[in-house]
View 1 (tube, rainbow, N blue to C red):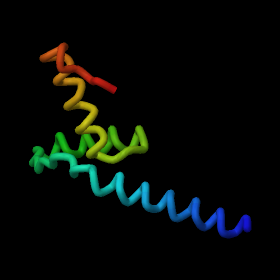
View 2 (spheres, one colour):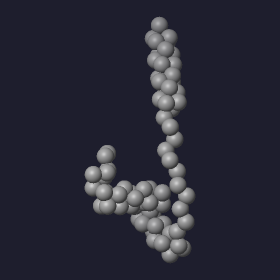
View 3 (cartoon, helix red, strand yellow):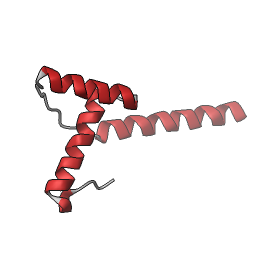
View 4 (tube, rainbow, N blue to C red):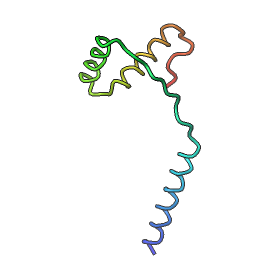
Length: 76
């Protein structure tokens, strides 16, 4: 009996995960070219923080937008 209940719970969780994934739209993507010296600096920052270069760039973009347009700042 417990095994069947567990199977039902697992199935419900999987259906929920699948439904959530289907509803999400992929986030917008951008391709950026950096001068070599700037990219090296971004890599160094990423290494020191143990994150990806993409994370560093997203963080910088969020700070830039918050500084330039405070009303559109970070909502999280």
